[in-house]
Amino acid sequence: MSDLEIVITPELACYHEAIEKLGATAFGPGRFTRTAFRLREGVSPERELSFVALDNNSLVGSVRVTRVIIGTDLALVLGPLVVDPDHKNEGIGKKLLQQSVSASKELGFQLIILVGDEPYYRPFGFKKVNPGQITLPGPVDPVRFLYCELQDGAMTGYSGRVRTCSSSPDIGAFPV
Ligand SMILES: CC(C)(COP(=O)(O)OP(=O)(O)OC[C@H]1O[C@@H](n2cnc3c(N)ncnc32)[C@H](O)[C@@H]1OP(=O)(O)O)[C@@H](O)C(=O)NCCC(=O)NCCS
Image (cartoon, rainbow, N blue to C red; front, top):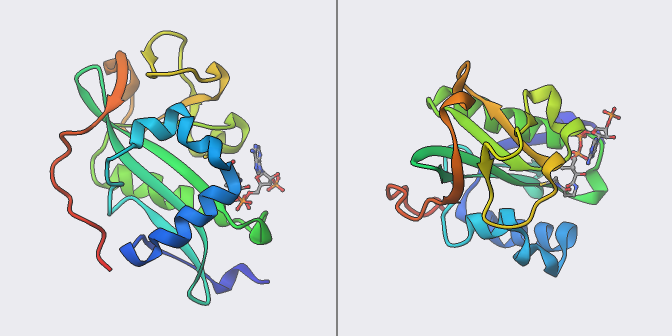
């Protein structure tokens, strides 16, 4: 399978079911209890920052980005990032990640946080959060709590607890 056939495109509402299925396969029922999941619960992902990977119109990967509040300041949380196991190691995850990070920067956001494996995310500018500078509303392995500055020095302006951005401006449902 050549990755030339893979198309990265913004998420649409019609992909919702396939994305849920991919997430269920990758993370199992335990995903609902994860701190990162709970942070995004009930909040629509950002339409312009969330992407899918399509192989001949079939969904083979997804990345979602959602607004959060850290202390009193707006930031983004990236995840889940998930690729169909049949398409692992074809570069799809990295392409999705690159697309979301670039789009977030272009739109003027300051900071992305996520919970994930640092070796995978490091090449995209993600680093470990200094213990205690910002905190998640649930348990997380501290070595997997990462941030990426979209503007130089942005992290120095953030402190406090990360919480759900329930008062996100209405970005509307994904177009079908
Ligand atoms: C993690 C995941 C998104 C990677 O997607 P992918 O399209 O298979 O990965 P890519 O092709 O972009 O990158 C492959 C490279 O990343 C490495 N890699 C994959 N998962 C990794 C991890 N968890 N930690 C470190 N490196 C990893 C591979 O070894 C490979 O390295 P190489 O290029 O040196 O050979 C995918 O395996 C997946 O969906 N996993 C289950 C869900 C998950 O854990 N998501 C991430 C947390 S939200």
